[in-house]
Image 1: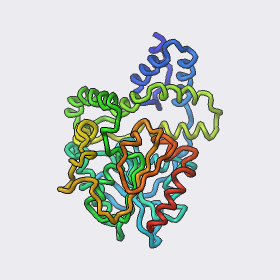
Image 2: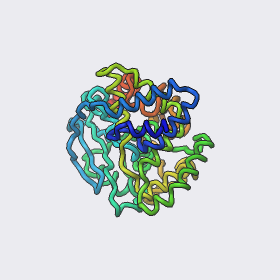
Image 3: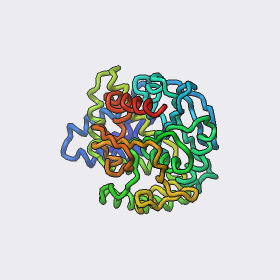
Image 4: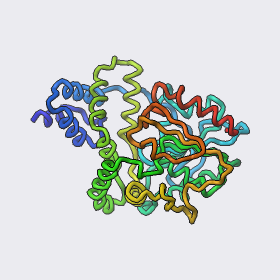
Length: 355
């Protein structure tokens, strides 16, 4: 009854997706801890009723390839263009989260010719567009419009796709950030849970023609449900109008948004990568080329985190240079220490390679 009343009383304009599952997790994780339960519910109510600050204006699209677009943050300055490739999961603006927490604007201000790939929303006719198709039919056409070989920086699953792309066309350099590649490095229990999730969700996804974002959200929550609840309890104590409140709202709104994946991309993600480790075993080919096989002359850097619950450090690609950060999967790109531990060092690395 108490859970039902909580659901009835909470406004539904904003909230974790899917909200009923979130409330079930909350109830399970706070069993026997009434104080934590009430604080988490208070944080949830506050989150849903909070006034959102205005979002920063996004650059207009400079190039389009079906649903995907390329947005330009920097300006032509004689340097090699720097292309940020985000994950297919959640919106791309985690790299431009707010005026105070924008990796892209920071890089543009440092003089880099910065571009961002926005994958857009897949259409019904895209159900058979698999991960390789996202590389060949979406990403590659965007890059062919550039007048110089780009430096590609891929975040999370975007790094996986960027590494496949770099095997197909000349690039100046390649950087991956928290990108999964060696899927056998994920905990066996996590891979088993994802296999069970996909076995349950696949029939519905097949009928829909896409993989709803909510399916993936439930998988992320399952990795660390206690942390999911604690962060809402902590949010209840933030001062109104504080930087902490603004940062939480921006990040949670991003985490609870996102278009679906095409059915074929979702199937690839669960079956070819998580289950079969095709990329890590050198068995994932894109347009007849083994994904990940780059010319020896291409500078490469893998940035990974020792505190990442989404992509373990050992799952990242083993590139020429490897740097480990003391931050989580999302915190590494938007956290309060991100300029110190990631943005500025990466900017220096780009400068050393013409970007």
